[in-house]
Image 1: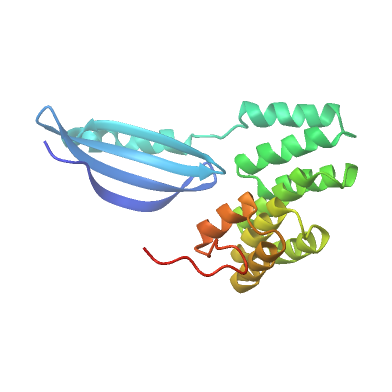
Image 2 (image 1 turned 135 degrees about the vertical axis):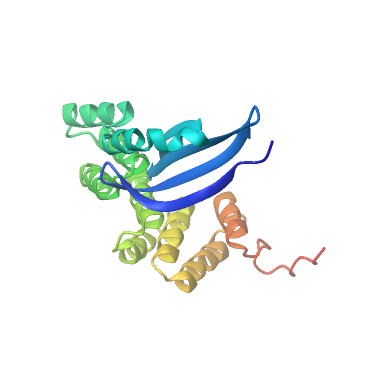
Length: 219
């Protein structure tokens, strides 16, 4: 037997979504097998359609494989359907709007997620989870406007570690890494030893020595 070998890796469009088409070969019971897989990612979810056949007969099934792949259609997952229903039933409540934003973020709909989080903040400006959700969308999806949103969040919440960390991530994605590091350093001076800041600084490769203490000795 031998390990799977990727013979083809190419861009593909699956139900209007950017995807990848992979062709792999491997041995099974002394026969060469071929797997054709179509893979696309929407938010945190990966969707895959794949077909396996004996390699010598793969061309026989090729037209069928293409027809099935081209017939794929995406529908909204149950989590998102329920979140939309709750938000529609309670349009004046911030909580369902935040939950809808979270569901949209996870299912790969960043623009809609921003609108949902914005609605939550309009209803209740104190909802820091909605603001953090907005910043996470900017950081993870790279949508324009992230740097301005991050700066506004830092100005409004200079002593809230979770917001500072999320804003730094958004700044970094927007290409303002030095500004993000400055924000993390300033927060570390103001809030030395904070757990959220400590974790963020470690993930960024920054020192977690407390301000005013000698640097830790290298191992």
